[in-house]
Amino acid sequence: MRAHEAGALHADLGSNGPSWLRTPADVNALVPILWPSTVRRAQHGALEVGGVDVHAIARDHGTPAYVFDEEDFRRRCRTFKAAFGGAEVYYAGKAFIATAVVKILVEEGLSLDVCTGGELAVAIRGGMPPQRIGLHGNNKSAEELTAAVEHGVGRIIVDSFDEIERLTRIARETGKRPSVMVRVTVGVEAHTHEFIATAHEDQKFGFSLSGGAAAEAVQRILADGVLDLRGLHSHIGSQIFDAAGFEVAARRLLKLHAEIAERHGRELPELDLGGGFGIAYTTQDEPADPQELAGDLLRIVKQECAALHLSVPHLSVEPGRAIVGPSMFTLYEVGTVKDVDGIRTYVSVDGGMSDNIRTALYDAAYSATVAGRASSEPPILARVVGKHCESGDIVVKDEFLPADVKAGDLLAVPGTGAYCRSMASNYNHVPRPPVVAVADGASRVIVRRETVDDLLRLDVG
Ligand SMILES: Cc1ncc(COP(=O)(O)O)c(C=O)c1O
Ligand SMILES: N[C@@H](CCCC[NH3+])C(=O)O
Image (cartoon, rainbow, N blue to C red; front, side, top):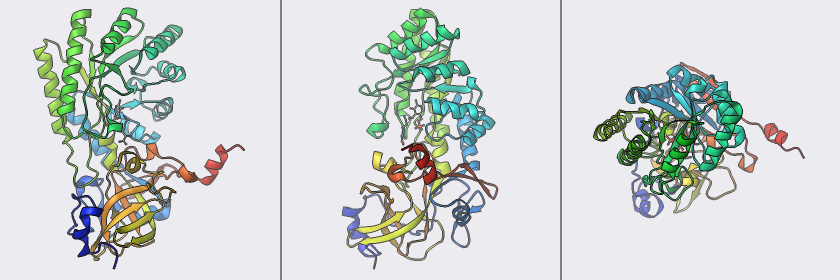
């Protein structure tokens, strides 16, 4: 009998699994909130996405592969655009960017937030009108700023006094007048992992509100007049589930916005509340509904503006994860199954921390299912691990898989659209997996698989 099978399961969970993990009534069931909307378990038991069987994806494109449900992604773009009404939705390219994704964003009428010259190059190549691009980053190089100015991007979110000086020099040299937003550190402790919270005081992003740096940045830009100051920006962090932190951030930003209006005699035309809207990675997660969250934020901004006798600025937001995260899953093949007696079953897949670093980096929780078939076996407590030379190379820390999980099985991990391919590495000289888009019964590669030859080509001896 495999470790943790049936009866032994409950007794052992306390020490070996998280208390929230419940034995599933049916190991084949798919919890809709975790999966792209076109995923189904077909009659014969295998998953199907965009009308394509996972066996066909594995056969035609190999494993591991990120599978991108195009219809689901488009649906989420529309949901966010509709929820935020007249506000501008800048999709955060850091979550996942590729030329094909940019083309979809253009078609769906979204704007795009990039944070490096590399992301900017993809945005331009994908045909995003430069006016709809915003450039972020706490250490943008002169080359990145120059490229942005020359392309005529719609806004550059300035993050330091050094950058203001650098950009002012570039503006003078090129004779252009770039539009900028000032990134404000609003002092909000977002309820998320320390490494993905970005608006508490002691971290690298933005100008401090409480310390007066934000007001000083505004003062310098307006006094100089070389840059066109559009407004204030705040991003409090990522994977946030409720509106509370955004509310505090919005109130603090608007207070500064009002002070600027009073001191400089003009209301800045724009206000950006950043991204960070969370998604469900496991059945434990209860993210806010985008419609409700958007409604709350728009209401707060309107109320606050009325109280401060301000007109409502043009709003923008920058969701990344909430749009692309649930639109993808990673398809792996199981290579070995090892019962570590009395502890748990280790299921090794043909990828790992090189295609999903989030479990190791943030202790992130994921879920998994055997994708190639249904099983009538009882659940066992399993840990899905990768093929890398690290004991921390964990993809899914705790999950119930059927007791007959075995080498050769296809395994799918949902919720890997955001910050997985974009944070993938070549650790152990593992080539990075492709991104395969599926729609209307067909699949196509939108980012090809790396090869060992690709890696060897970089190694010039
Ligand atoms: C400035 C900025 N905007 C938007 C985002 C997107 O965040 P998320 O993918 O959590 O929506 C990030 C990442 O946290 C960010 O740093
Ligand atoms: N990379 C992080 C999000 C940080 C986004 C950048 N501010 C994650 O995987 O959750």
